Length: 120
Image (tube, rainbow, N blue to C red; front, side):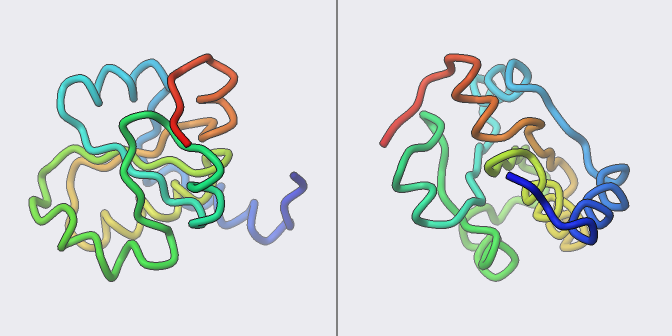
């Protein structure tokens, strides 16, 4: 997918403020209890998602995260289609006081390509 220059500039400006993890790190952290949250659109989630993930779309994450994950020190790993929207969502959660948030680099596309388990 080709992204607009303004969107890419926003991602590059935001990325230095957000911790990114690899797929292997995300899987290890999930095994250790990290919350793994898919921030894609509902239709993307319904078409397939990472096994063990929870859903909370980027459009409502700021509104609903405190009900889903009230502990602001909990480890949270976010992912989207390619690792861009999850960077923006992670930055927003940090601004809300969440202290242990990361974005999974490569997103859903890399997750699938790696052979990691999926659900529909």
